[in-house]
Length: 559
Image 1 (cartoon, one colour):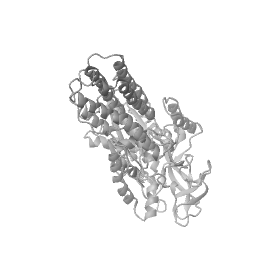
Image 2 (spheres, helix red, strand yellow):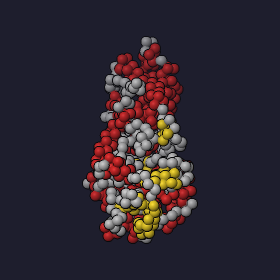
Image 3 (tube, helix red, strand yellow):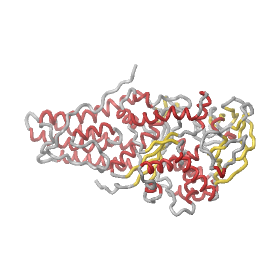
Image 4 (cartoon, helix red, strand yellow):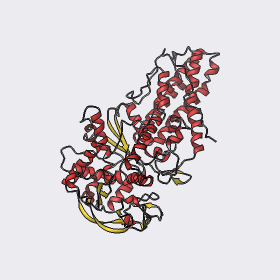
């Protein structure tokens, strides 16, 4: 298999979770697990991956939760941030850096973006009307206003976006708006904010979108349609006391109206600030440039479909405006493989509405690899996927355990029992043996193409197909019978099966990394697959095999 895909710089930028609650399986299947699968594949292939994200500490969901509990927003962040690290460690999500938006580095990078866009003529102040709660005596940020969506009629739409139809909103768009603080009908009052002058970037943005290839239809069609409908000037500051301040020399806060930079301006900037923080931690402050300024580098943004506006329209517009006239412009997204929703009995998973149990709850029932595998079979890449727990169990028991885990166990066990536990001399191969190895090599090639295109569900199906074909090969040749009559044929059969398993070890590795590392040590490796190259390596005759135990275990739901 060709190594032409190796040694590329791949930025894997993953959505920043709000620090107002733990991730549920909708989040995990929507962006975090797909990002990790993609990153692990590229590391194995020999590419230089930088996978970054962090806790979004400044979104209004945090201040809403803090208000509800009577604590400071910082206390909410400090409570949940360690739990995020726990869930990534337990599930095996391999961030190069998972940080927060509370760092000095993040503030400075946001300020640089804000100042440069202002200097380049893409940010300026505007007088506007904003909802004011007369009972609370304060202006209301977007998420402090709820009402009926004018597009789909959902009665609990937020002031920034409707969770039901995904439409981006302004609080004044809502029908029968109400304050989340007091329940009263808010009244519009004049205030001053900084606005991103998007119409000045519309032509550049649309030209760039027209060049995108390989994007999912629901992403590119929505983005181009949104831009063609006409971009409007959009506020990038809010009346808040929590968040990244406006650069001091540009601050327009007043005693009655304290300003902060809008979370969807500063949070997406986190991909850049996290890359710079990672570089500083490596002792090479300029290392981030290889992923952001080299035109040959790639950047892939893993998000849910409700975040398409911010990653396919707004973030590219910030980058275009920032890079205007720059000697080294920043790279625009290579791809935004936004997933659809995971639903639970038809209802969208939501932290704010308490739909869907947390990831840590599931990890108390399912081992990490088993849960990763089951979720990978239902990734909502092109349509919403309803999650049924009994289907997760079936996938684990009938596919992962029965087809792949048992294959590994029985081949290694037969080799240990009958061939001294070493990779045998195969002797002469016949058509059946060559056909099996050709099938595995084809599986890896086809899977590689699918992984490159972020078609992860189908990529996993190819890996499973390889395991099923290897099982069929064994069932046809019956080495447990030929060992009594033809030891040479048995050795050939088990040699070919071992070679197939060694190839499938890579095929499954992005999805079930813990088991794949263990298996590698059983067949003479050191458990480190990164940089091996996406190809089947031949196990040398005489390689001593480890003593196998079940790679996976059957699971059942608690009563």
